[in-house]
Length: 161
Image 1 (cartoon, one colour):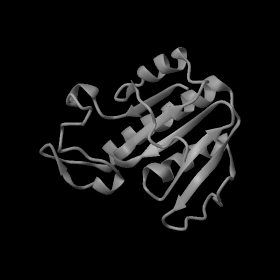
Image 2 (tube, one colour; image 1 turned 120 degrees about the horizontal axis):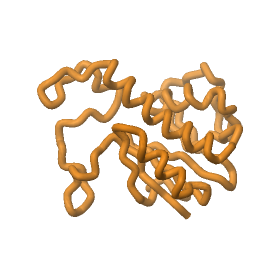
Image 3 (cartoon, rainbow, N blue to C red; image 1 turned 180 degrees about the vertical axis):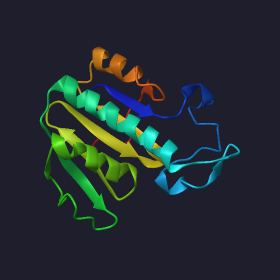
Image 4 (spheres, one colour; image 1 turned 30 degrees about the vertical axis):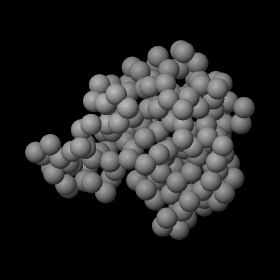
């Protein structure tokens, strides 16, 4: 099964063990307003990066032709009801963008599954993983063209959960 890690983290800044070496790096929306690398991290900067992550998921959806995803392993930290989320809920593509924002912003967590196609997993510190047989070389190459995101072959730590 193919698995890639899609992140904002430049792999050239990893050590021999794969650990990210730049210690002054924002890891979520909660870091907006904090000082990183001598500058205040702004909401505008956050939103630019968030949009790239959403764009990556949209590439995967478009290239595989799925029209809905299932939300599994739901963890709802704020009891958000805007999308009427529940474990195993089928999410139409029209709502996926909003759900991804909620996940990236730490409001909820879950895996997005397109049965027999792919899964999207979200990790701590703004990591995202795409897993599945539908993850073709063509899709991976298109993901690599999203400026500011890095795509690396990597086994998702959220498989089989």
